[in-house]
Length: 336
Image (cartoon, rainbow, N blue to C red):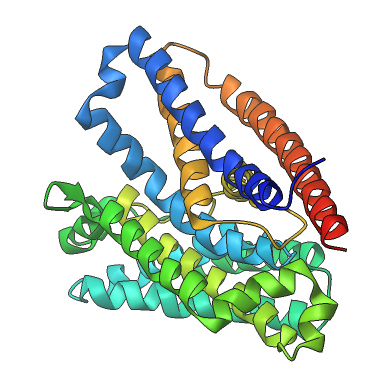
């Protein structure tokens, strides 16, 4: 028999176990890789790993919001490519534009793309996986059309634009700093605003959210718009980071974004997910991508390892959810 005082403690421990498990995994794999290649734990390599993970971590925030409501945004990779191509074309034609203007351009264009997808899902009542899959092809097709199939290369971009991602502030890459700012902004939004709490309410129980007066249609539209804003920002930063705007940018990357969220404990059925977990999930994937070449493991194992880790994470998520539900049922029975 579980006492009333211990039942809530059990629930809290179960909810926090997932993040603790990821932290332990990150520490263990870092020590193992560091033992085989000491260069892995050097500041220079850790900084480069965080730099390579920054864009993924930004995209994972938007995907988390969508997943929490019970949806999914498969159009993120194509939206990133489209905003990146537009940014490349604009900066090529007007090289004296301010980098800050380019950031707002990416945010604005991405928000429009996300809002369009949100309208289809929220008001059109189209299943998220169908709507976003369709828009994924639409946005990718538009990218090819406006570019004429051509790429924009490094020599066609001004240094001020490229330094927006490659430059440093207080020893950290600007891209890492921007990613941290994104997390700070969304931390406040998710945990300290009414709208942030309503996002979780919609994902936990859609009908109950409607009954208590939450505008579920608006919330659904909002999360896709926010996801669009973040993949728009990421599109500009991607082009600045790699000094290249290509038609096939980020092809297949959406699965990596979803993987970061799932690894971070975001439930694919909605209602569960945390920014800290998503950050840890992104870092975990960054470690895998960075460590494999350093220990001379074939890069072809990368996708296999990601798949195995995702499968284990989903299984653990199911077990934890079931344990939490059992603990809550015992607590209700005891109160009765």
